[in-house]
Image (cartoon, rainbow, N blue to C red; front, side, top):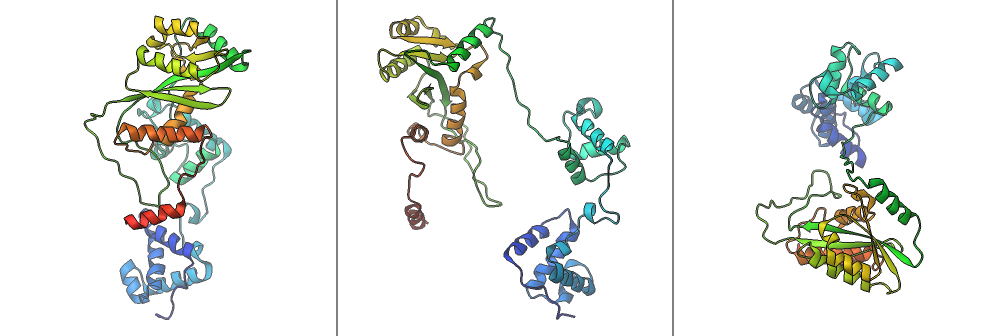
Length: 359
């Protein structure tokens, strides 16, 4: 009886069998995968039967199935492998299932959000379906265009001059004024020295660990940023404080980057230091024209979307210990963003040599 053994596994079959072995919710697949893996490990069929809790005859049968038909011949799912095949639901039933899923759960089940299990229990309690598996329910919802989505926030502007300011900014976006240059200005920060979570490529089971911070004594920094709509460039300077005494030097620095004859049409928000008399006086005397966004409508400022990318590629998944390190990382991203450097910074072979030496 021990002459029957599983054939040689292909690489992907070995990975798939190890995944099936970990399917604790599907004892059948787990047992079948263990049978094949133990057989490939040189364990005799009688010992395999004792380890997995079945008869030697069944062990031989599973091995024959695998040798003839591969992994598909030994997998078993209740939904697909039932006697009469998958349960069939008419179109009106699936549409009603979708309507229930889109209805407010607070009124139907007294909870704030649905889950697949609670939705299935409700459908069965209301006799909409006699029974249904979680996987089949998920597929029906997907077919009906019902997806799991995160909620978002939206802030309505309470500015009484919203439409006048909105149209003024939209006209500026639509056409460049003669002899002028369009700019978007905003502040990015405060920038603290703390670990920031993010996402990255990793092998299964691996995750980066960040330290926990309870006291942050490194202070904060602010980035005054300016986005040039004509050149498609993003520039900025760092400051320790955010007020009119630091904003005015940034405005002078920005004015010096362009010809004196050009009028800078600047879009910015209604921060109090933007409206300071000294700032407004300097702007009026140096050919700078301000376009203030409506209150609660910062989305009109186009620099906001570029700050989103800056946060993702320079700050997410980092743990800078000094502000110099953080500012250097932001400047590296801005150099790439503005086309002043290539994506490649270091040779892969050189990196591997240094990594191997350090290990």
